[in-house]
Length: 557
Image (tube, rainbow, N blue to C red):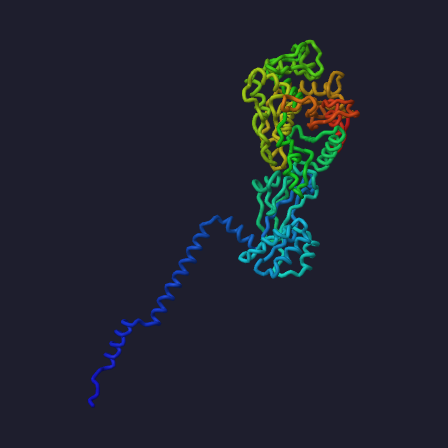
């Protein structure tokens, strides 16, 4: 048989055509693999670009939390360096639901260790096996952590977190505020730290590098004020009480309290209405203490002087309401007598002499027309008359028809005794001078001089309503206020806010105090009375006699 004449080159060419017709499996798999790799690469690049476009802080926060990081906060100390708040490392209990062998067993045993945790709630958290991390209890004591450890339950673990503690407990809860479970500041100075000072994400204890936040508070003075306010509230049967000690020249808040208060270590108490901070979040008609401002306005504007007299013979009718004096003298009173006798009729006439425009401008200068902003937050907005007619001008002159926070009133009173300067109150010491935060003259020095002499006469003079506030050797001066509280059918004479604004020593006042008793009750101690001269004035005397030595104010012989 003749041999084939087909060449090897021809055979290779024909095989290639056959491959194109039938498809090469190796080549097809290679193409599919190439497309899959390209798709994966594009997906990874897209994700990296998306993450890169996000805010750096969010990414860092997410990474830090995944690794168990904590928010480190600077310590808080008083003006003398005494510790008020700090971070400590505490274990927090978590679970990996996918590794839990028996949900019912874990739920029952953990709820037995922590009575506040319900077994049903724990069981629900552990039921989602797709989640690999859930918190069960954060910030627990080492002893309780050891109890959980000794249970030997798989799927449970601990992470150390920084937790905030307050060594002084309830001593300054409203001022310090508190933090949430993530160690973020929610109220008070703690919130100020988050907004102005800053906190740091750290991966363990000891990583804090910020200097302590130093407050204007003096812890010894704070303790004395709170203790005396507490005793006074019990003695006079008051439903609540509050007080403040201010540096009359710098505006530094040396002490401030509002009772009932709460412990920053257990902040749930702050949510109760009874525990609100009445100094900054309560607005009240404060009554006759406002007459000190009214007399100052009359003197400063030149509308009246010490020789001016005011008709206090008869009550004044305004619509359905009547203005009268508590103890009417039924005669014309001098400006000094209006102050010393605390005459509503005299103050009302002073308001009319001032006029709406002038009065409102002074109130604005006193800082009483807008909310007060300090390091512990924004105070409640004052409640002002919607229409400043004749009735409103007369009633605000003796402290009714206009409601402000006690802190606002105390700050406005500083100008009455320090030579005429309004100084915003402050709670945090900074490198700036104390007078750099808005100190401004709002009254003439001569006006302040006269007000100081009237306040002193009100404590030592026979007609004065503040005689029980006197402390031998410290030259105390002040003004009483007994404000009837509004009710459904008008003002209720049985429910009052008794208050006293005081200062010492009056020849050159260094400190101003303001105390308030909410709804004090008549008693044998007060001979059945509830007026400020009977309760708030002697309470002020006890406070000053106790804090003056702490403030290094020496008594005069």
